[in-house]
Image (cartoon, rainbow, N blue to C red; front, side):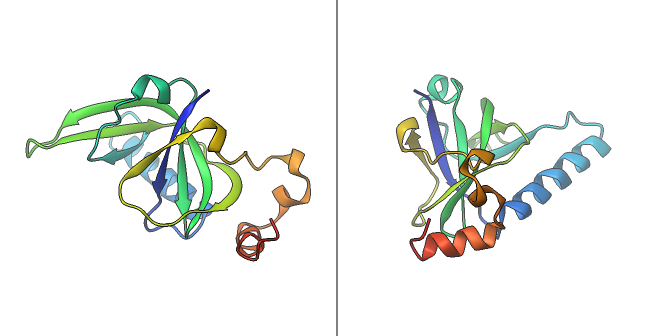
Length: 145
């Protein structure tokens, strides 16, 4: 079973915000003649890299709810210019909405076992998948989803 990470998406108010940020960042990299790849830089390096790369995803918490995920491509530890160990979590640039689930704020990231991960929001879920994100959020807050 895959192992995932759970991380707060600071500054994003919606999945659309996250997608816009990714698109913008990739365009900047392409314009600078860099290899366009999406990554998130973190201070701590996960210890269970092999498990994360075996089908794992980074699940994003947006406005207090687990809202979306991105599949891992790589985990690259490095040392920055100031000599501090850091890590690039390299992700597929495709954001996959998931069934919203409340999540309290926390610092850093947390491991998320595969059996605890919310399911993808797919067409198989019927009308829920077609709803606007804000409506899904409100219904989840009311306990109706």
